[in-house]
Length: 195
Image 1 (tube, rainbow, N blue to C red):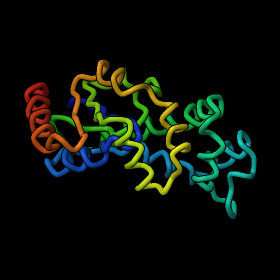
Image 2 (cartoon, one colour; image 1 turned 90 degrees about the vertical axis):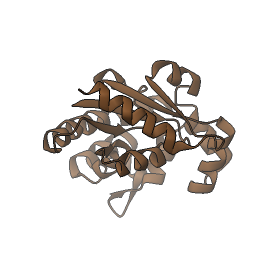
Image 3 (cartoon, rainbow, N blue to C red; image 1 turned 120 degrees about the vertical axis):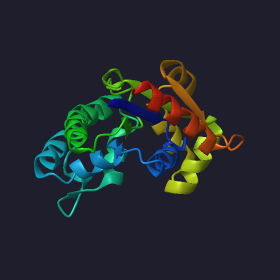
């Protein structure tokens, strides 16, 4: 079974691409969603409060927006958060693979696969790419975020071109090319590679 990483910068549309792979019967693990679930684990909550203070809490529960404000724009704080969450996510992913049905390949969808240092743990990497301005517009519309906030978040990610060079496959999601044929082409290659 191949382990495939699916990544892309904020607003690239990697979740849409992941849903297409899922519709083809490929098991997809969403690392970003899982990491949010780990914020609800009592031991993780207490560790985060120790790192960032009670200001990140809302009625004893981690307020994700307050946590984001505490870490984005602060490289050290973001590294501390990632150091805490990434090993938990990878351990959970590995357990998820064991429980997955026998399939040619599985996908982990993760925004910061390269930034976290975990790209090396995958057999293939797919990068979803789009122009920065397109991504900014998408995130502003999706999250009702301000442009400066989006730019700050983008500033912590490796540039699109660099991720593309580091990846085995690149999917262009700029609105000018159809996604489904690109995904199906990669799916066929991964099915062959898994034999």
